[in-house]
Amino acid sequence: MKTDIDKVIAQIVEKFLPRFSGENIGLLFSIELRFSHYGKTQETAKNINVNILFQRPANYTRVLAMINQNKFVCNDIFDMTEESYHDSCWRSDGFSFLRMLIQKEKENFENEIKSQKYSFDVCLGFVPFEFVEINKISPVSSEAYEKRMKVNVGKCLNLNDAMLIILKEIKS
Image (cartoon, rainbow, N blue to C red):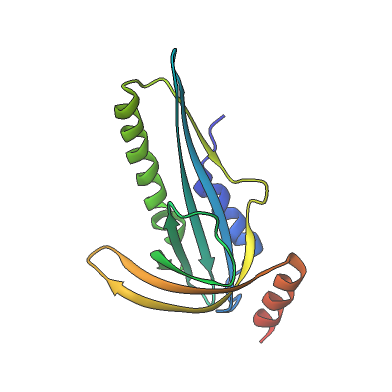
């Protein structure tokens, strides 16, 4: 069975982080891409961590990504790439970086092991997503096709606290 991880994540974002949720709350997904090859004499493995943060302060949805970083921790400042900031196209162009990354890393791994026989998994982990407090997002640089942002993340929020913040924002 094939699962399109981008469609699954987009549905979760739509359900748990509605439009007009406010500027100070985000929904974070930490994904691990795993490549494994079990040869006759050795095992080759490669893991790539991808963190994707969604913010929906109004009608637009912002998609920010950070690749090959360790576990995303709260109360820190991160350098992330803004993949999309749009009202509806975020579902496609917000994930194009992930599709391109997977394709590129599959090709790199095939070249490294000199084979097309390997396993590839996309893992969301035990906790597929978490709510985070966003203190501030500031532009760092804007190249032709890349917009770098400094993201100041506050505390991680439990589901109850996150829903209270979202409901308060939607009502105001």
